[in-house]
Image (cartoon, rainbow, N blue to C red):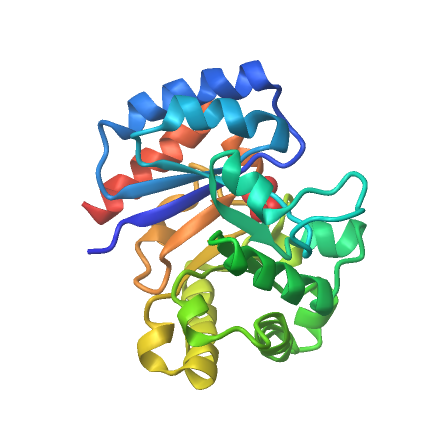
Length: 255
Ligand code: PGA
């Protein structure tokens, strides 16, 4: 059975000292549980130090964002190559908070995915519908559009390194979730779209994660769904004790 992936998205939280302390504890925890891989999406300032702590463990680092160019006059931005050099294997792209607060549209998301693949970073591409889109029964149309526009021009050999995170916008940080069965059905749809665009054998490599208000209380039935390859956890990943419960529940479900 494939190991499940847990992405901890710390967003704009944690100092370097806090991040290092957490990483030491997580490394020790993961040495006791098989069947789970953890990706820490940690703030830029912490990456270099965390890379040193996590070397040789089953915990990888993700950047929370990159620019779409490889270098240049973009004050305040950071490139794929720079975060890779700092120790990242992954990068989150298209998170709804970036779409909402920083105006990222399809074009930027697409260019960032290209930039990641160019620099051998694995993109974790976030998709999801808003409440209004869901109420208008447009969820699958929106997800289909996010996939075809976000992945435009990507060659099949870039796709097998891809992770997709299905994160309904209305479920992020709200305490609401889809049901595990709905997550599974939606993941099936995402896989089918990928298969239509890139062929079934390529699509089979893509891991599809669910994200939105996952906690230690609700995690178990999600990870029991065969279509759920893992989870993207925001708020509940900030507290080590809470996240370690999520790791344990995930490991138990798959062992
Ligand atoms: P949440 O965040 O777990 O706090 O809902 C998920 C996310 O933003 O990816």
